[in-house]
Amino acid sequence: MLQTLRDPGVLLSPLTVNEAVLTSKIEGTQATLDEVYLHDAGLTADSDRARSDFEEISNYRAAVQIAEASLVHRPLTLSMIKTAHQRLMQGVRGKLKRPGAFRREQNFIGKRGDTIENARFIPPNPVVMETALQSWETYLQSDDDDPIVQVALAHAQFEIIHPFMDGNGRLGRMLIPLLLHQRRALTRPMFYLSEYLESHRQEYYDRLLAITEEGDWQGWLTFFANAVISQAETNLGKVRAIHDLYEELKRRAVEATHSQFAVAAIDTLFEKPVIQAPEFAKRAGFNNRVTANNILRALESEGIVQRLREGSGRTPAIYALRELINVAEGRRILR
Image (cartoon, rainbow, N blue to C red; front, top):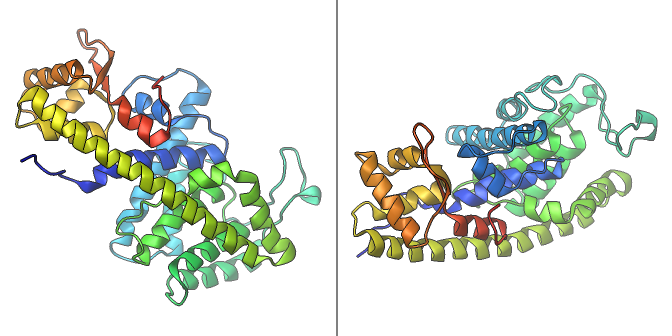
């Protein structure tokens, strides 16, 4: 009988990374999921745009981890949100706009070059904002409403309050799975809505704006509920495909390697689909790199992994589990 997965969360790892890619894309980054994995493994385009994109995506991933760890001990608080914001904005666009601190001045939303006089939306002034944030924090910790309704209202309220000078959109979307996790609707904060919001970006913005301009909360709740239903179906399809792929590759790896380390090797590749050979050996728990390299070569011969870079001297070989990236991102080719 084949061994079982050592950490079920590994199967969702590609979706977690893809969420960081998509929520950042809404704010203007261009990096794709496969590019992020290539960058993590040491293969990346050398451009200012690429470096900036990768850093923003990396910050999002780190901020989610910080917030999830905090939820083990306490509910969502304003303090926790400021900590996550500080990590989110570290060293990227907006780094000079007081990361981790609520704004002390008036901000606004509009097209590039707009002034406050022709802004599309003007959030509450800082004095009113402080009271609004306290009420918002109290609402986060209540359980009176249905979890989906509460998350929809809390997300919209956060975006309307717009408490930071930058990064409000990404942080507001991050709060969706975190609050669902806090309400025990999720065992882990791994429900990702940015794919739907990215593909319906204009309607997303219009629905939020209609709340402040027309008081149309019902329209927003309907939009959000439809987003949850649609994204849940998409995510479920991907999770099933990832699970099926995992079971298939686990079987093929055992047959190809006849090794007790076959399942650990597949687990490692699902956790990090593009990986340098030395890191693969360390993560999979191999005692020596010769055995790890033999496993990788066997997996390559079986067509499970593809070698993206040959190893030479101090330059390690890099391998990719391209099928997993294809499933997570919905693309057929790893560039």
